[in-house]
Amino acid sequence: PGGRHWSAMLNVEEFVCPELQLAPCHIKEAVRTLLHTIVVVRSIGGQRPVEPSPVSSEVLDLTYMRTDESEVEEELELRVQQFAELFEKDLANAGRAQLVCSFYTTKSRKQSIWNMLVGGDERIVFEQWRLPVIVQPMRRYPNPADNLKEEANVQTATSQQVQQALHFVIGKANAKVDHLPPPPQAQATYKFDVHFASMDGRSLGGLASSCGSATGSGPPPA
Image 1: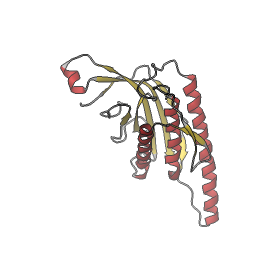
Image 2: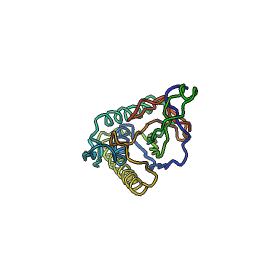
Image 3: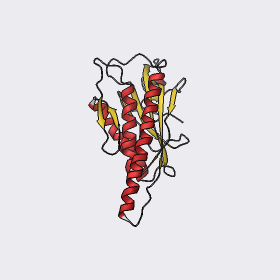
Image 4: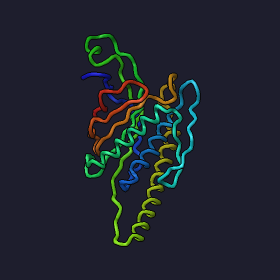
């Protein structure tokens, strides 16, 4: 093993968002709105208060909050793109996958030869969000007018699904705060890692990432 090592995830507060049934064209935007919201509600540290800006979705009929930290925003956009590619490249299991966002802190390990090999810091995950997604292709009709009507109906249904998931995220984030460690000092957002998994928790590809520290060696074991 190399790089940072994942700790056993004991006493992790886990939130599983309502399952989203999405047309392929809506995956990116739906996941984008939720992932940005999750990070914003856990941006409570730093030298200045984070000032998230309300954004009207270009695809769905809803408004959501985006972080004003450019590095974090770029990281989130990259993960959204990669998650959508899981479905485009048919790497998801039968059109089903989860995006998993884990917030963590780090602590220094005791000096030892083994710890020099695996890295000096241990990650301690304290909160994890799971966004389960199932692809549901739109029906197609011979008549273009019927196709337009179908697209409008699916867009309305998707907007409602995502809006309900946003309420879930905000409600849970506000209700569950006792487990949070002291806010970070160097940046507004807690350190977080994003990876992708099948519905039964198996990792899908090597697309783990971290923000707020060096890139990790991979997702935590399921």
